Image (tube, rainbow, N blue to C red; front, side, top):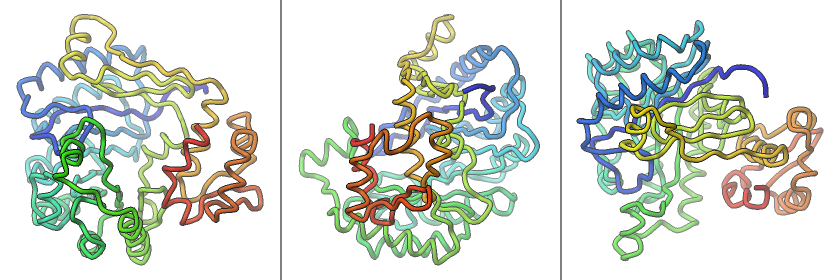
Length: 375
C-alpha cells in the first residue's frame, strides 16, 4: 500500500494503579519515569524522515490524562515538530474521570484535543468496585459534563459481564450513560486475560464469570437501548451518534497505514506490523541508548493480509462489498473462507446478498468465535 500514514497512535503507559482485569502495556506508581519517557518519545519521533500530515491522532494507554495538563502540553509541543494535523483532524485522548478537572480540560483544549475517550466502565458503585476502578459514578458525570461544556466529543466506555453483574445492572448503566448524552459509546464484555489478577482469582475460585447466556443478554440490551437512543451500531463494540464514528479506529479497520510511538505501540505499513517492546523501562533504555526499540515484526503475505481484512470488515455492521474487497485485497471472501461462509449463512450468522457479505445480529454476538476459521 502506497502513501504516507495519515493516522498516528501514541502510547502513554502510566496509570495510578493496574485494574485487576487489565493486561495492557502500562506501569503503575512509576511517575518517576515520566520525564524519561517524554525524552525517549522525542527521540523516537526522530525516526520520521519528514513531517507527517495527519487526519487522526490517538493517545491511548495506560492513562494519557495521568500526565496532567502541564506535561500534556509539553508532549504536544514536541509532537507539533513532526505531526501536522489537518483542519478538522480528530485528536483523541483517553482519560480517567478522576483526572478531568478545569486545568486539565483547558490544557487539552490548548493542545487541540477534539475527542476524549472516558474510561467510565460503569456508573454503578458495586460494579466499579468489582472492576477495581478508582472512580465513582459522580466522577463520570462531572467529567462528562466538563468535557461537554468545553465542546469536546465524548466517548464513554461501558463494561459488561463483570463478576456478579446482572442484566438489570447493565440496563441501569445504559440508562445512566444515555442520560449523559455522549457522542459515542464503546461496549466491552469483560475478558479474562492470562496473567491478570482477575484470571488468577478466577482459577482460585474467588471470582466467577457470568454465564454465556447472561453475557449475551447484556450485550443485546446494549444494542437495543443504544439503538433506541439514536446511536448507530457501526462495529461490534462501537456505537456512535451520526457524524461521530471514531475515525482513527476506522483507519485501523480499513487497514490503512498508520504510525505508532511509545512502549508496546504497533505501526503498520499495509502489510507489515512492527511492535515496540512492551516493557516501558526496556523501551526507554533502548531508545535513549540509540538501539532499536522494536520487539515483534509481523510481515503478512498477501493472503494473510486479505484474511485479516475479511475479519475486520465483518466486525463492522455494514460488512464488506465483495467487489471492493477483491479490488483491494486480490482475493474474494469465498476464495479465503467459502466453507465457513456457507456454514455461517446456514446457521443464520451471516447474509450474502447483492454483492455484499455481512454478519447478522446473531453473528455479531458470537463473532469472536468465528475468526479462527478465517485466520
